[in-house]
Each structure stands twice: as structure tokens, then as C-alpha cells.
Length: 153
Image 1 (cartoon, rainbow, N blue to C red):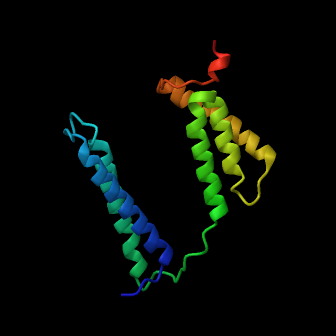
Image 2: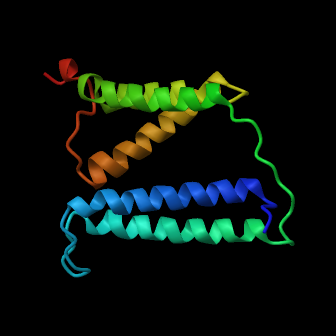
């Protein structure tokens, strides 16, 4: 057997490893049942679904009908900027509130794109902040500060 589609092969491996990792780490929580789910139920089921999906992605990579595809170089700068944006969001959310943390995340991650456009980034930030506020603050009633604590006193 020869790997013809390396991109699908490694994507499948990533899904399988991530799914199995979720399943292994969720074993420390109680499972419960489908009717009365415990804290370990959802990550275990999600991990199983990811592992099965990984197998479904991986297997066709060996098919003769699969096109020859090689993995291209990874853009480390873009990956770093996206991860930096997420880290900045995690650290600034409690101190600066959701509004500023989300805008920082979007702007930092937007620099990862090879064709950064300021106007497009501002419109995206406005739209995502409004959607996230409606979904998480109003819809799900999550308890995190929307504005910086200094402005809410």
C-alpha cells in the first residue's frame, strides 16, 4: 500500500490522534448515560466521532483513484499569529472584557492572512463581536465581562 494523497492521510491521522486523546483524557470524568450525561460523556462521544471521521478521511488516501497530493510547506508565521491571537484573547478577557479581547483576537489573527486589509478586518471584527455577544451573552447567558471592569463601575 502506498500513500497517494498525503494531505488526506495526515489530516486523518490528526483527527484520529485528537479524537483518541479526547477519549483518553475524558476517562477521568464520570460518563453517565445518554439520558443523564456526566461531564465525560460529551468529550468521549466527540472524540469517538473525530476518530471515526479520521479513519474515513485517511483510508481513501491509499486508493488508486485518489489524486497524487503532497503536503505543502507549513506557514509558521500564520500559525504563530493565529495562536498568538487566541493566547492574547485568553489573557485579556478577564481584564479587558469580551469586547476588547475579541477585537484583539480578530486583528492579530487577520495579520496571518497574506492579503491583510484593514477595512475588511474592521468590518469582520464588528460583525463577529455583535454575533458573539448575541449568541453567548444574550442567548447562552454566559457570565463573563463584556466591557472592561473599569468601565462597568
